[in-house]
Image 1 (cartoon, rainbow, N blue to C red):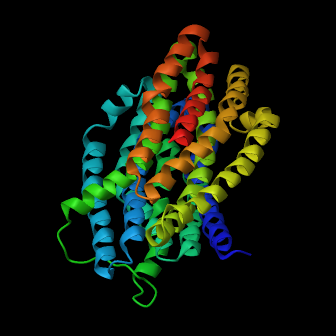
Image 2 (image 1 turned 60 degrees about the vertical axis):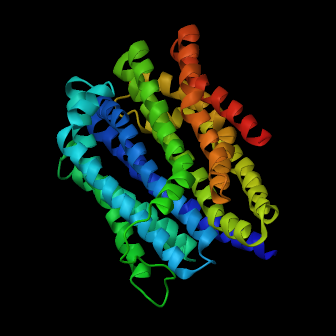
Image 3 (image 1 turned 90 degrees about the horizontal axis):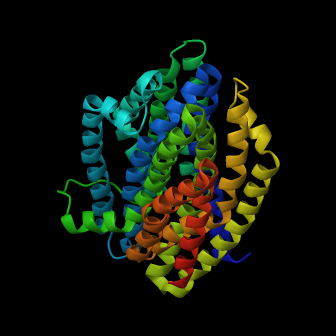
Length: 426
């Protein structure tokens, strides 16, 4: 087997498995919240998830940006790699403090701005407050996993993500049912999960014989910080796009069908987090390989890994989209504990239409991170902006105006197709 293909399979397979496990944070919440708190719990969770998207996206910005820069620069000098790692950690710490202050002072206002009110609003406030207070763990685990992967430990990164997810699933059940902590229990389990991952990754970063990168006592450098943000901005926008799409969806669904419609979208959105995580895992697995190849041999070598990625996206998307189309009714029923007929009908329709965009979504996510990996951050940002803000909002509003709720589901499909065409024409 070609050594490049062997490296590709090792990094991407381990990372997809790890990201799949990591994505189960929210999916586990969706399942247990639906069983323990019904439609109102699902709606509250759906209103709060955009905040999680923003936190996770910020962590990905620091990690993908820092990891890409580290892989591009580490061959110049070891000190340069250490400075990049230190800058990434420093920015995460400062940002986490800001998030925590917001979590203490403004969770209710954020819930209200996102459209939650009444009982659903109170539940949403609890979730937002706790997820913001746990933001340091979410930011740091992203950085440790990405730098660990770039430091030659993709297997440990996978284990860290999987252990965190397993903790979340087990304690979601314990906190929601035996301990009867409700929505607070769900978010407590989710918030503690990255701590498990951090402890796992520290077995690498605390071992001088295994690690190639460490923090140094040095004031963060402005130029390095700006480059990290620039390279990682596409990843932040990609995650934010999921949150932005969710916010717009929620308002349109609330306007057209009330909390039941929001809950139906909640089922679709939470499954989409798993699908996005698979493609993000694929792209993040390619990142260190593409960055190193580009730094040593130029873009021609890096494009080999992009080709492998596109082939993989076709295979994975075919499996996912066909599986969801065939079993949409059964999937929706898993999260419909109240057997709400309206919820079931809307969720099934939404699943079939939304995931028709799976192929285009996967290609766009992979291309955005690939461009960041080879230092073409502007193209990475354009792809992310098109699918996250520039196209998706007006397209969804237009289709809602013409076709009502049914039209909203097609907005994502149209947006992802246009974005993909722009990406390939660059």
